[in-house]
Length: 236
Image (cartoon, rainbow, N blue to C red; front, side, top):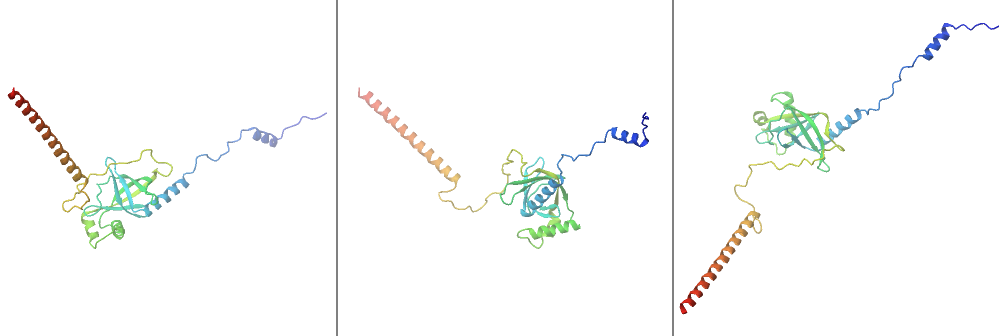
């Protein structure tokens, strides 16, 4: 005769543990990591800024302005004002369009904060020294003139690029040239056969003279015809 099996506390505990639902295991997320993308974008931004000294500043409600710059510690330094490149008063945020040095085409479009540097501060002095060293035909009084008349700004890119290789906008961003008051006020280079507008004016004058001669011939023919008719009538 067999005795009924008695459950030990250890057995019941093990059974309860085996029957209890297990917690969901943490599976690796399918969301791609943004760190490599951010590092690649930062490297591409630094390369584009250092290889090309020209960028375009897109101002909301205005046109896109080309500007030469110096890249220093994550900021594009620009100077504008009398005797320097013309730029409008920049808002707190702009878009920077960077070109490829190899192809000359659009490479990156990024947003940037605008910081106007105050003359006399260490930031202004460092930026002015770098800009003067990079500027063509720089003169000795550049720093004094910039402090008195010009604006030195630091454009600091932030966030992910709005446009980058493989993610460009569909339209070509073409814009008409900006209007300018520049004109030739004195000597103009000589052109073989004259300039285009001069050629057109001479052709228009020749056509008018030819039409006037043709009209004169027609009037002369009509007068002769009337004279012959009058002679015949008198002869009758």
